[in-house]
Image 1 (spheres, helix red, strand yellow):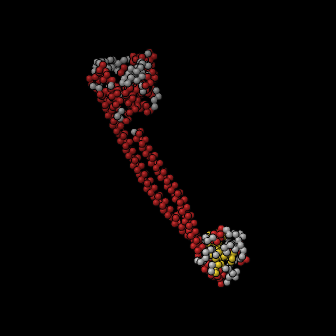
Image 2: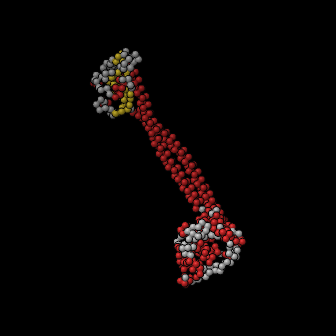
Image 3: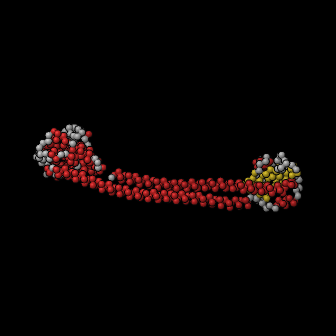
Length: 449
């Protein structure tokens, strides 16, 4: 029964741990999905921004080259007059987002610009995106303006602009003719990016939220299933425990019936098992045995002679002294009793008690010839209680001894037949509780001995 209860507690503990792990998994999944959503949204936002800047760069380059190219390029040579016609300037102003256009020669000299014309003809360092454009690689980005180079644009109130760098080519030219540096107001592009970014982040959030919701539903379903199975397991465990208790009760009743059958065969021993049980428990309590050991002692004492069910009646109730073969058969009853009760889990702890209650302190007992501390304490207790009852009750082959005579036998058997500690506990318990030993005022009897 204890094993069944332990199994039930173990199953409940395993189920609770599984539910906790499911909840931890759900929380960790939420965190992982949130991080994944942020990372994916950031990656998609950067990709969207890069594509938008690339599209704007291509559009601005085509527009500026379409306006200025015919006037600036002569064949395969960049020829820029400082006085570009006002018509071209008006065409450039047609794009409200266009701020500044610079035309660079391959050697890094500013050939033309629509703002800050005093800069025309000056050479500036070919660094970064301008250098790349002069080498044939277009570039574009939204960035802050340099303090020195972009004083004109900063004076217009801009602190950052869409900056585009594009090489000037012609189909028949082998080399780069120059480069465009175009500054445009990024307001509309940034507004478009912001609206698309919100849509993108919202869509990603909804997708990942839907994924988490689906996962939460799965976990909830698994948790419900696990709880239901746990409830069913608990109910089955309770039913099993009830069934096990009923089986134990039925088995105990069967053992008690067998024990009653043994005593019924010999009317002279009626009540013997109960008297042995009473004396044995008194000795065990005197020795301070705990509840579990006292429980085993109680049943071991009650069923110590259960093995006599296998002894032939002719031997069991023989009025005369047994011969050697009959005595040998009678001595088998302790081992037979141990085998009988060993088949019942509730009585397994009584097996060594029943098997060894006829062992002697000097090693001359049976069935295994154990001696001194080899004998289980509970078996030694039942052995003394059994001997006491046999001494103090009438049997066909001997009369009952008086209390003084029986006590003298107990004293005489100390450290030979009986355990010294058990004898001492017997005497102390008999003095304190004489009625349980079938005695009258025992103090005088003990003093006389």
